[in-house]
Image (cartoon, rainbow, N blue to C red):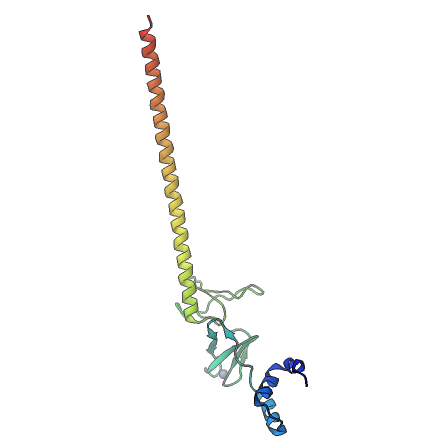
Amino acid sequence: MTDFADEARSRTAHLLRMANTVDARLRAQIIEYADSTPDPPVMGPTGIATAGCPLCLRTMWRQRDGWVCASCGHVEEELPVSCPNCRTVMKPPPTSAPDRWWCSRCGRVATAGDSTTEIENRERGRLEAVRLLDRAVAQRADRRREAEATAVSWAFSAAVTERERLRMERAALRLRP
Ligand SMILES: [Zn+2]
Ligand SMILES: [Zn+2]
């Protein structure tokens, strides 16, 4: 068998390659093991995602296409995401929308399999963005107030100048012989 064909049956082939044996009995055992156990959990950016199994309450692993319980083998396509802050089930994303769960009580957002730390970090980022936005809006309001004040003072000095001009003109008229 070529390496290329090996890759097509990746996990079983990988285990057989690691075992590096021609013992038919051992190879059969390895194949049986590979077929009877779920694929190793998917590694997310912050490690392996786990959740509680709704049936046996033991650990479920996130797989590419859902969740599998390591103990009882129960499979869930998607588990509800709970808000780590409010302990309530977050609102699921609409069908075919991106994986974004949302807490209607505190506004936290999560993707399925997020750890509490990830959700809290994202929330900190969200609050920071809101704070920066508020500040930008406040600064713009300040600048508008300043601009208005400047416009008023220009108008005022223009009026003063105009009055002065008229007074000078009148004075000039009076001075005329
Ligand atoms: Zn279970
Ligand atoms: Zn919440």
